[in-house]
Image (cartoon, rainbow, N blue to C red; front, side, top):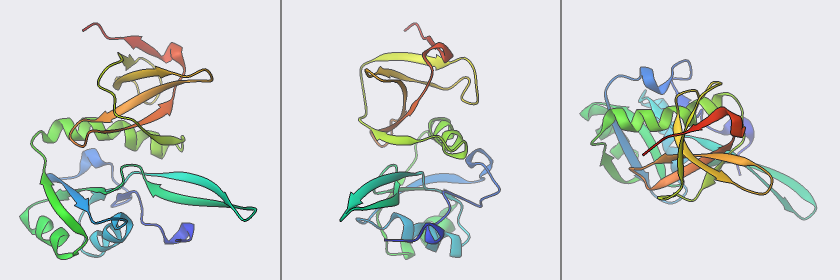
Length: 183
């Protein structure tokens, strides 16, 4: 298990937003448990990437353990041209490199996740939903973001879907910060 300081940054270069990255987006489908190692190799090769991660807390032998785990296990998003794609393949950590057909849509779907992570809000993996109430955030840092509302007995969550992967994440949100989208 890595120490907190040994984890790669979620976004590299760290002083940029994924919206500022120049080039073509690719998705590396990594070999099992190779996401962080691939991210470090991309840093060394100067390839911009996004690896959203979330904290998992567990207890073992009376100790509390905190681990930073990929939000979408098996995937690293990176940006660049054919040279960067080749560098990602040379890491020998990718099982496949998936081309992104709709570049704008991918960035639009990933940006709210980046924003939530930058705010330090707890984000958890969530089942990808095809049905549910579509909504739009009308206030706060996620204003304009669209997602699905899921209510539990304790909270309301906004499900942020990445359709290309068939995966999603959710974040707690106040119900009065969203409005229904008419289909």
